[in-house]
Image 1 (tube, rainbow, N blue to C red):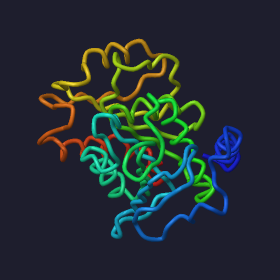
Image 2 (cartoon, helix red, strand yellow):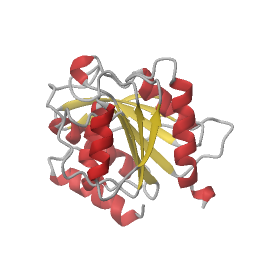
Image 3 (spheres, rainbow, N blue to C red):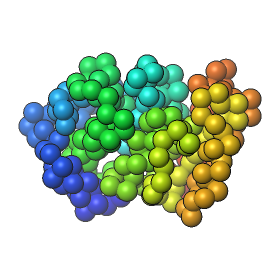
Length: 242
């Protein structure tokens, strides 16, 4: 993604309420760790996971969104952290964060609307701090919903959606990029797999769909398989693969 597009993301966030905190926000860290950003309703707790030391760093930052806040979802969820691990092992810098009302993030749950604002605030900071690098979005369950709803505004180069809760949340009008990987467990007890497959069938721009048999919503005993599916699906999108 070029400088102009990334700059537009930052300006859009500024227009929507000055989420980007300017000098009040910390610089992008040189070591993995947790920091606090100035968000639309107060503090946003953010974790930065730098690429594995033994791989070539890619000019990509992926923001990963967590599952439903009111059901215990956090940036430390095991599917979220495995997604981060899978991407880091490919040389991608990963940013996880807690939506409003979760962990050290201020505010109250806002049914996905305010959470999109939180995501835009984090993306604005990433764009400011890492200009010229590609932006990827990823999300698990409710996080997949939030990232997909925000995709039109943020214009990511690529997207990864894991168990998007089609049938439970309104996915009408989402506009993901052409590079889009969707992973769905076929034994998901929370998100109806068939509702996801039916929704995909209605889309003009379809994702690469990976169906994982005998796999529950939280990928119990399947996390290593999830890592493999993510890496197999996105590796060809890396600059070196071109």
